[in-house]
Length: 278
Image 1 (cartoon, rainbow, N blue to C red):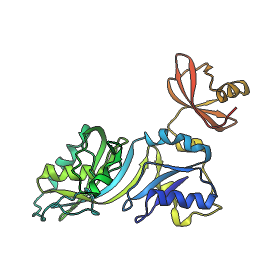
Image 2 (image 1 turned 90 degrees about the horizontal axis):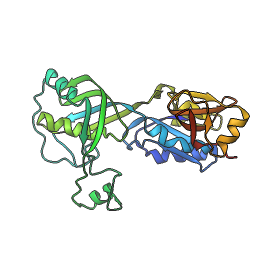
Image 3 (image 1 turned 90 degrees about the vertical axis):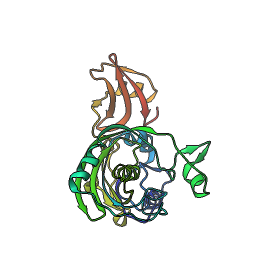
């Protein structure tokens, strides 16, 4: 199910709502959204929870707004200001150039208030206790960046980024690049891969009659391979099937429904995740 998460609740809260509506504990989500953020959250129900890693690995598109003039300890509006605000004297030309410089593969230092593990403990828990947290930089890929508006000390922009990229860290780094500090004040996830929030269900509209999408709908970018009965039996038992003409990840269908995700190479498809047991 594609959900449009509102501001003010956690991603876990949204999952709990789905669990209550469909009366099942077997619900997970892909790609956590912070409580202040809104937008696309993919909820996986039943055996489709096994698809989480494939959805999470997709690029994500966000509409973001940052405030210039000072940074915060969380890199967003929920944190404490790190110093007094400074005057913002940034032109549109300078802002466009600064945003454009983020395009491509780069390293990014995750926020101290994040779910990253440090010595077996969540980073945000250490940060809340006042511990100094400096997470190692990780490679990220900003595949697209679009300047939208500069109004006073507020800038709106849209980015498409690889999995694991923190947009609030981009806002922080933008402020450092401009020399005035910045933090994220609004964030909306618009797309995950080819999945669009325009097709999502508002959380308040969720009810027992809300239809679930077929499992293959959350991975529309994968090539499809239809199986016959013998191939399906082999896949259910984790055995490779022959006749692969493609390479890479493939969605394996039986009678139009997703049975498994496989990896094609050298003429064979090896099942990686099977949704229906033998």
